[in-house]
Length: 124
Image 1 (cartoon, helix red, strand yellow):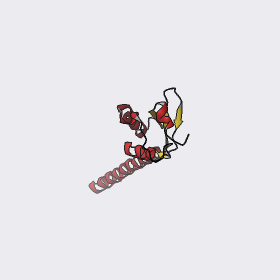
Image 2 (cartoon, helix red, strand yellow):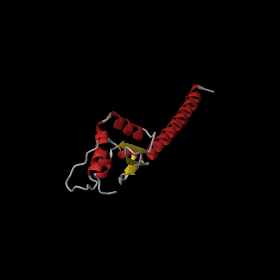
Image 3 (tube, one colour):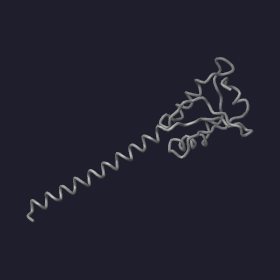
Image 4 (tube, rainbow, N blue to C red):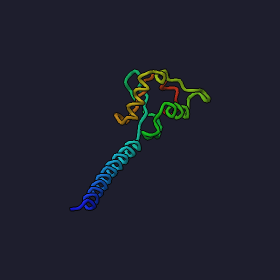
């Protein structure tokens, strides 16, 4: 074998390795996209342990604090023109819950609420 044949074989091997690495990257990217397209439920959990799933259509990629607050703000209220109030939205636990949903550890974001906070909405 001469030097040119060795260089040719090395370039073939390098190209094959590069193709395999690219294929692995594409498979990982597709898995992430599939995970981000997963549906997420947002629910209010009352003090009595009962949960009410909010009528929000959300995918994992849509989940952020701003998006959740905006979508909750679009829900119908019993008192027309009123703004919703949920104390749990300003807690560290709420942000941890968002991070768990975005990270794929759960598909349900639970927001603790008292009876008055649950009953302020008109979708029940």
